[in-house]
Length: 119
Image 1 (spheres, rainbow, N blue to C red):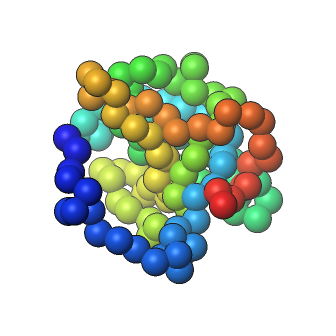
Image 2: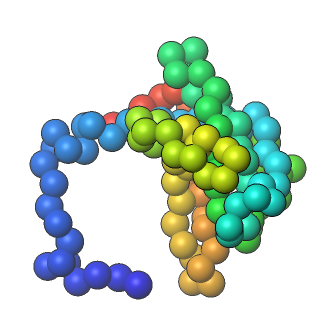
């Protein structure tokens, strides 16, 4: 569902600068049967400065755990941790809904080092 442009709130550059969008490499992925909606638990490496973080990701429509390991993803790394069932999610992996409602990962189109910040 799209919102009319007039309904979209405007933010300042300083608001955008506060969001830490970083590239990470998926080290491990497994099913998350305790989640309310189908999801995977991802372990994502964001480099030496940030380290490895876990995330619950509702991306089961287009991906399997085997196809996720080794992939680069873009995630918000400065949200407060969120308890999702037995998992403390430490970052938010980003994506877009396709026409069928499945989540397509937001990824860089070339290899960049884990931890690189979106500018």
